[in-house]
Image (spheres, rainbow, N blue to C red):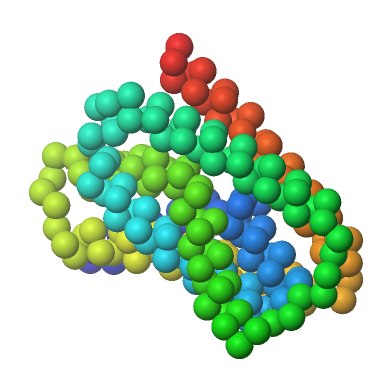
Length: 209
């Protein structure tokens, strides 16, 4: 009963946490528009895999991170550098002349790795799941249990994948009307990275004060 409750809470929190536009779900949307729903789902799978890994790491770092502000600052500064690099990357891609995308037989595998890479570059889910894990008494005063930890990781991964999957379905359905999105998606992603840079800088100064 406790394990089921833990899974459901984590599932719905993870589902709602990635509803706002972010690096991975917008990549899911972009791939759904440019390469079709299947490729968008592959990116979603890659992103969900990384969330599972991040949730697992968060369980074991929960108490340590809360007791060490230095670790928080390191994560935030790493995120700042990563988002700056990604902003430059998407701006460069937006300037390139658009070409027709050919879906190769290995495009599904490539899309999964794309989701993994973009998900791995986004470090914010780690402190998020650290906070959630601590709130649910995982890594607190109670002893670690493999089943509890597994339910937490599964809830985070499946909840995240559900939202990503809905992104893929939605953007695939409006593909015929999404020429604007296809044309300006790289600019949108670059703008999103810059917004995350600003948020990260604010959080760095907030934790430093």
